[in-house]
Image (cartoon, rainbow, N blue to C red; front, side):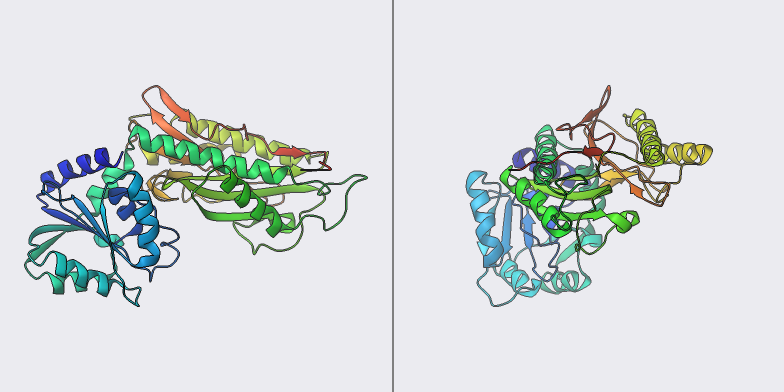
Length: 394
């Protein structure tokens, strides 16, 4: 797969007049070099650096990493040798040491060098310009974002597997919900919110996921919030929203799922969930090649206003996924991107219930010639999953 990605990138670089490409952003690093690096986005002081030089006699891509990141990178590259990894044994985590090692390896680096300006810290960019005064640096961000918008079939396969692992994690945690409902077997305080979301994570790892991202369970009075500190107990009755993201081989699946604990759902909530689904179906019908992202967003906002359905946010109703949990294109008013085949979209139409409940069920689709193909197919979550019984054993 990486050979195909690097071949596409080499062609785009020739069109842009770039001789080489420097990558200091974890997502672009992974997209080009291949290795998935654990939690680098969450620890921005842990620097990464890669140089991609298509058409050279040696390996086209070389990475400079500190030992804690070099070890997992080397293990992955042993299976798919898409880059050469150089471990930098320094008592540091910043970019300066990596740039010095790059300078030692390629003192003759010159010509037009691509750098993603929007994803490279100013201090790193300044250090690169100081180290290579003979280079002319060009913004490679638009080129990289354009390539990442359209996935290869192998990339879509990895996203589809991540989607399955996400839902496997949620269903596995639900299987532990004995006692977390009303009825004769109910025991107050049996299942804590942090324990529940931790079991989502554990079951996803048991299903083969590579890394976790955003994870939260929101229930009770907090159900209207996007996120709350993970504390307290699951309610004996009512809605709970589970949000989780995980990746498979560097490609992400993201979701939000609704469950309802107890026998009787408030009819007003059921109606609000049906309204949410109808808006989602409207967006889904437009999720096809040739349609602008802003038009999909506009149609949903217009329909919601016409029917009096309160959107939780008018800022967007979906986004791309891939090497990042959230990436382009964006189903938002200010994104004119026209959908084409092999884009992947996380459809996130979020509305409010009668008491301000935040209702959302995120599904991921691949845009195909004849319409969208559901990648998060493991279970149908169109309406909240009803928790009406319990298991005495897992």
